[in-house]
Amino acid sequence: MPDEIIEEVQTPETDNLEVDTPEVAAAEVSETVDPVEAAVQERLAQMKANMDRMSKERDDALKVKNQMEADAKAAKIAQLEKDGKLQEVAEMKIADLEAKLSIYQAENTKLNRDSVLQSALAGLDFKNDRSREMAYKDIVEQLSQNEDGGWRHNSGTSIDDFVAGYSKSEDNSFLFRVKSNTGSGAANNAGVSNVSQKKTLSEMSTSEMLAAAEKGQLGSFNI
Image (tube, rainbow, N blue to C red; front, side):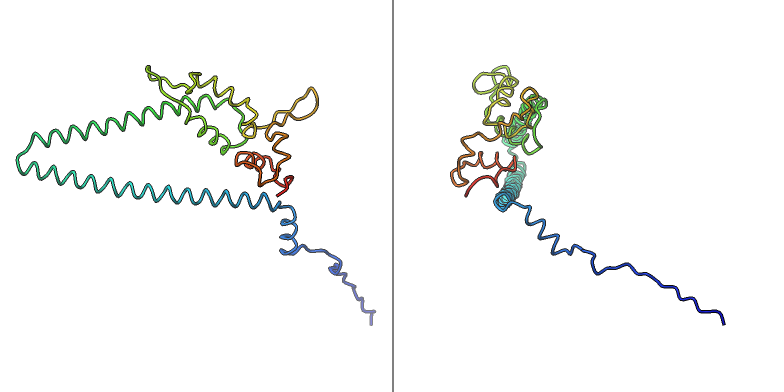
């Protein structure tokens, strides 16, 4: 009989293979997360959640209040019409129309203001949408309308000029992308001043802490 040919099947050696388990991967990720920055981000998230909740509760309460007022007004008008007091009904309806017109005019004014400000902010290189929103909220509270219906800064400066100065201020530099200085080869980073870098977290103001968080520098500060 011919000799039986036995083929030796080689199986890959698995004893020395290193397989990352979910526990190992989680441990590696946790080592890269700065605990101070994580705590700040968690606190900011909680603050935003509370503000969103309170805003919703306020809006719901206003809806209920407005509906109750509308129902009471409709009932009063119906009673006046039933009693034949048409003059009073007409006056109430005119007053209601004037109130609605005032609201529409205020909304149109706000839209015009927002359009002018957003146009001035459009040319700036913000870090992200949140930075843009922070700048918008900061500036819009400082605007006022003149007799001609135009919008200016409270100081009398035009919106474009004020926004230009706002973007160049070191106090607001953390909102914008860092521009490199090609002449010296070093980055021009004015987001956090040298004074704030010497402070501990407990000594920093909210704006300084937000500036440091934007730049991922919270890990370099002492508690």
